[in-house]
Image: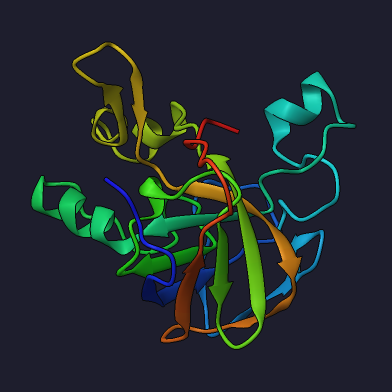
Length: 186
């Protein structure tokens, strides 16, 4: 599947949490800070903030400043008997109308009136997903017929231009020039 340049969608929910927890509460709005991430969120920073990655090498650049998840996935999970609300999988931005997983590395997402997030890769689903809701991990991670791993728990990005986001704000897609590299886990 592919996404066309100029594709548009909308933000359906925004979430943040200053503490490292699995789920993030919904907010009326969040502010993205260039080069850092979501203001006040535990994952904001120039260097990696994810606990397991900090333990390995705290000097790594933070390529996971913003976690975005397609609302279409939440609807699919609910239909399969796994009701999940926006923010409950730890995402900062829940969208509708853009196939996030089909974006290439380096795509720019224009969020709200001024923010820009550069897509860096796929979220790597972890066992915490099954701790949140048993059986959910196999719905968001699995294997393709060729044996490759399929990750569907959202995408990660870095903030290039800051701004405030609210539910209902638009999402625009700007594809990178040249050959597109598929998303890999970050």
